[in-house]
Length: 366
Image 1 (spheres, rainbow, N blue to C red):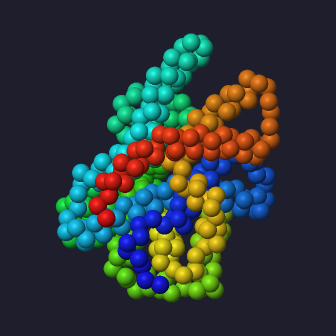
Image 2: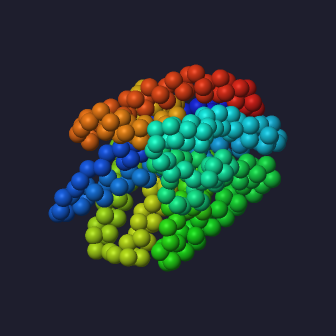
Image 3: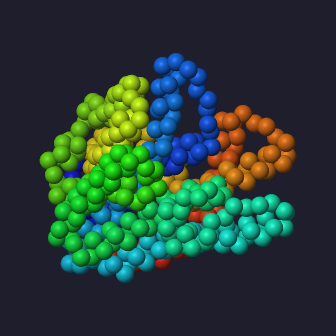
């Protein structure tokens, strides 16, 4: 099934984004206690794999932006960095800076009025999208926004690459990937905390960009993924669970640096699989059944608001329940807070984000 290059919206990728958000939300909101024994160790391992969903966001963003960028260059003969930058700003900044107003103006006022201490960081780290490098502890609901800093930093780098290095884009992206691998090796050897560092996630962005370049070039592996039918696609989908299972079995007998090395290799394998999975979902006749869900597609559409607000919902939801002396089972509380998060994010999407999205769409050149 050939790729329709006139089509730049893929609902199945919105569904994947929605599924990834749900994984992130439950990882942050529900903390099951696992007992001892091999089965519980396995459950604990797979539960913590939900954190890989952050990588999915990065891969998806890079794939879509690179795909649009190389198609724009092919059809228009050039790439408009101005339009690219404005489109990114219109998508990210309106909601983000409203959250900054809430965090650095409303919250301090409310905390002073109620006699509560709020541990806020210097505002500049968030206002200028470098919060991923601010390591001291601070209010819970802001900490999740480090991913937006990582994305904004990469958006700037990718835009410049699309502007100046279109003819050597693959080489530049491979350099990004090499730098990320080198940095991750360094971090493992030095036992450094690299979780929030942009260099850690250059591999994610590079994998997404290379998937878009390969799709455009109709590479052999893309053709193989495209030709998969139901049975072949089923086998392909089993690759990632198999990798995670092998990783768990190896980690059972590893400690220290070796354990960290295995974990990083597992993350790299996950990233490469997701990049290939995205290509298969965009081009293949056989698609993952769960990604046809209308709810997941809608979740993906409003996922930016869902992600931005979920820290606030979790923080103030817990405070409200404590004030009312309400104790709920952990999973039930997570679902209730998720419902509240959907309501707030839906309102944000329709009344705040959509007017800017309409302007953003007018700036698209293809």
